Image (tube, rainbow, N blue to C red; front, side, top):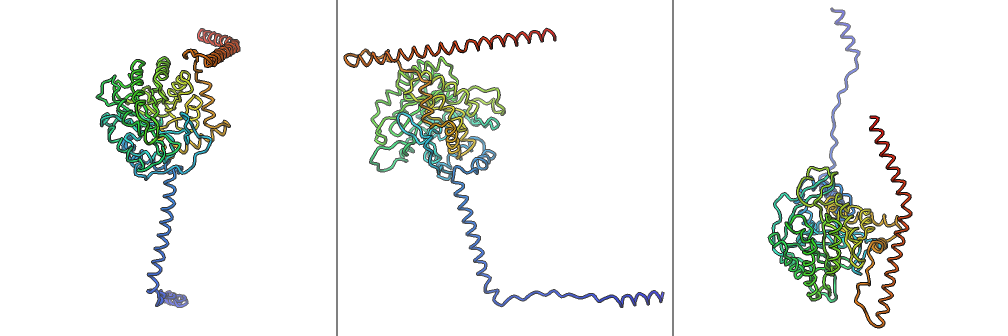
Length: 508
């Protein structure tokens, strides 16, 4: 043990000593206490500058309607947080108080439009139903729409149908609503329109107060009004005629009992005769120096015979134009969302097929002098161009605006410019060509017989008209003959397929 102990002692003695470190804290300079407030102030100034710059950049980004922020962040967030009607009301308030984005880009010359001989900045309008009481007119024009339609407005205030009454079909990008014309009434909306007017003006202005833009008021009737009464519409013409560019007679909402019955020929004749008489009796507006245009808004659910009857009535009563179309009561089989079972009018892409069909039919039975405004399922520039090729002078959007937010109008206009570049045409060129091709040629044969030199001109016009009819008839005959062999081939092919199916079933 002693040897072991002695060896351990010797080993420990040879071990190098462990150094002991002392933590030293450098002394602060005597001047540090004096410089600390200056450094803090500089840091605060830097933070404030960064925050101000960031806020400024965000503000610029937010107030530009082209920002992806609106379509992909803000609008989806609103949809996730609020039900459809609450989200709708919040959007109207944001536009009313000027805290929404603006379209800051000048419209391309290729999408300039024209209607009733008046130039419009672009062909994209907003349909009625979004701003029911005229709260956000200027905010909507700031988004780049050339046509803003407020309403429907009823003579007396009414709450509309019970809630819930608006339903999103997100998988279908569609909406079903049964609002039922909630309205604050003529007097309230009229006061809002008057508040917009400048105190002094020396020359006529459009009711929109913006060159190249049109303000339309959509007129509805109260739910408790007699079904066949036209008095609510006549009252609307008298109230809003002096303060609007266009008045829209809405007989196509599916959410007011009996309203669509006014589309029947007999009722429609009486209604349109009444409103045109009321419009013609108005004094020219002190604001616009003219009387408003009258436009009829139709449902997409009318059949061909009904549309032909309506075309006759429109021509007889001198209505200025037709909007095709309102929402549909039909439910396409491809709808996915469970809300498809809800009662009300369906809008969005699923209604496009019905609207286009009705538009084409009506275009073929109205002269070129009566313009059509396309509405129903328009969400892209390609959609807008498709309506132009079907004979629409302008188009309106609604549901796509609700889903994509404040940048929708700008996006559609930009897409339309690209589509027109592919065509090598302008919007007006496309519209003019389609209207000329689709619209019937007015017959001079029904004109009153004239005398003297005018009689010669009338005979020449009648001869040219008959010549045109003969040319069309010969072209149709030629086309039918060209198609006959092809039809026979298709028929034989069909027979072969049917025979093969019979043989296959026999073998089975």
